[in-house]
Image (cartoon, rainbow, N blue to C red):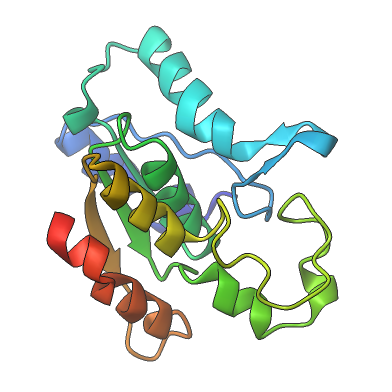
Length: 178
């Protein structure tokens, strides 16, 4: 939970650019809402945290000034928040993100995912087309004619998430809108 603060220059970078960087924890729960356990990470990050920080600090309330980013699981969480709350976030970045969650869950033992997404999955790949599927969220925004946040994807070629980033960036819906 301290990797970004202790292992990077994020503080100096933010200070030099007069930015506020807020780094919430998602407790290895993919930043999704789990109402049955009162852990609504998605709603907290997408709605409440943005409002709390705007009340606590002199921050802009403009969409174009509000960004979200994350690494690995957090990359998925950032994209999910940006696509779920596109009127709130002007941009989103995923660094080595786990972006094709339906494929990820299809290729791993089911007990690894037990309860993470708010329901017990019986079949691999059950997340495809749900509110947890980034491709479905992107398609929904497109179909509704809503504005997309600016999207930035970064992933090393040897990273296991590279294929997911490539697939997500190639999504025809996204290509047209960002």
